[in-house]
Image 1 (cartoon, rainbow over the protein chains, first blue to last red):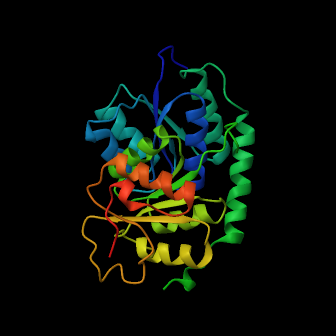
Image 2 (cartoon, rainbow over the protein chains, first blue to last red):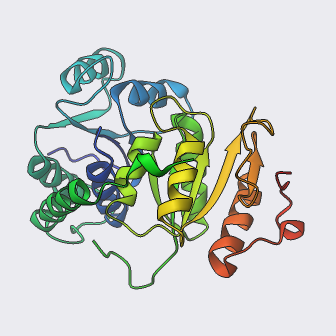
Image 3 (cartoon, rainbow over the protein chains, first blue to last red):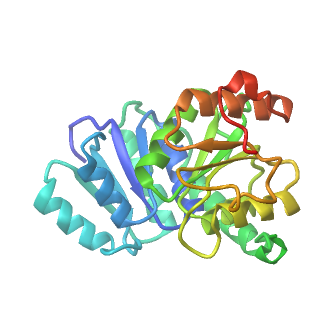
Length: 138
Length: 138
């Protein structure tokens, strides 16, 4: 845990349900949050020049030209001032988000990270059952 | 998870250009919408399988199996209460045949115009295009 204040977090996750919920949780902590679906999108954001990113929260197996570890190496070489947090599971991602909250613009986490991971699990299960059929399109 | 005491309309932004996506998503959030970001039509279907979405703002041309038009067709067939706005920099009348009731926004667009159109759609379920400043697709 660093003493430096963090204001903006880039969330990199290839599963939209996970990404959206973790991003919403971090926004409720007061962070400015940017979302990327792949490590390639993350690099595009980080090299664009218009966005300030203090920390990157990335799933280890993120999709893209690099996985999460590759993005971590790239960050260390090109953006050493940005804090990198890798997470290997939904639970660890939610826990990492709550840990970031402790250094965020607000002191407390808005709700328990275990609730977040459980909610995501339920949504993913519901999504597998309710996937809209692409067979009815025009 | 419910984070807010109020109940803002939920907009699903579907755009494969990550910079375009995060900019319009943030503008819509600042305007008071709850926003979910999807980088593809397939991601959008994943969101629709688990969440009620008031409005989809989608690019027409996207890589992958489900482009914006395929997504719009599925939404019109299976999610009648979800409003749609389509956008593109180069869609023509041939591309958009069969979507005469769907508002269309030309890229590059002004965020203010998109926000005005989105607000009208989620409020009234219909669009007064003379107020939105946007062109209606013919």
